[in-house]
Amino acid sequence: MNTRRFFFQSVLALSSLLGAFAFALEAPTERPILTISGAIEMKNAGAVARFDMKMIEALPQHSFTTRTPWFDKPVQFTGPLLADVMKAVGAKGSALMATAINDYTITIPMDDVTGRKVIMARLIDGQPIPVREKGPLFVVYPFDSDATLRTSTFYERSIWQLKALEVRP
View 1 (cartoon, rainbow, N blue to C red):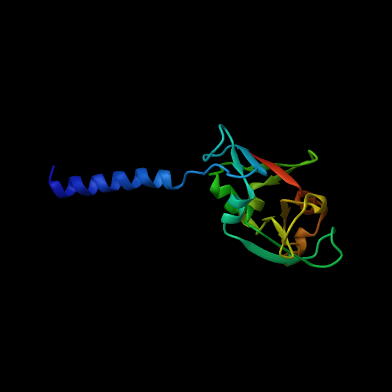
View 2 (cartoon, rainbow, N blue to C red):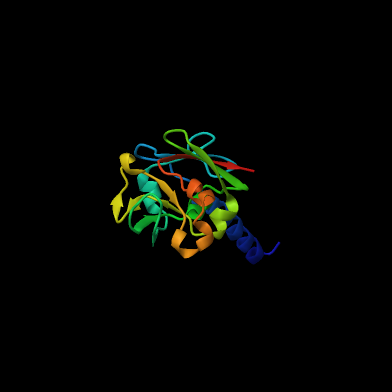
């Protein structure tokens, strides 16, 4: 084998190995507020991925303003796209079972996650969301962007006080 070819094969193998480590999910350093389980590739606590607020803040942030049935005026929601959260854990599934602090559960199809700009909001009008006001995490659809979203089906999928997501095959 010539030296040049061996060198390039070694560099390629090393970069693949380093790439795998670059995508490792760090462990939370503060109190975890979200647990993701099920069909995920990236874990940081046994068989699950746990996130604290700093980890959620570190994901790309998006905002939209929309009217909802829960507020008397349009509200700005800010947080990562649910799709980005799923990418962070390497989700491989067809649906999410979302659970709130009060144990309310709802299934969110993965098509919603990948095909709509659904936000896992951590801010309302630029302020952190207290638990007493639907926080700290609130899954919200951009209702004003598409009239088909303004139905009970999508309102029910907009789960507040989110504490856990299970990725289902």
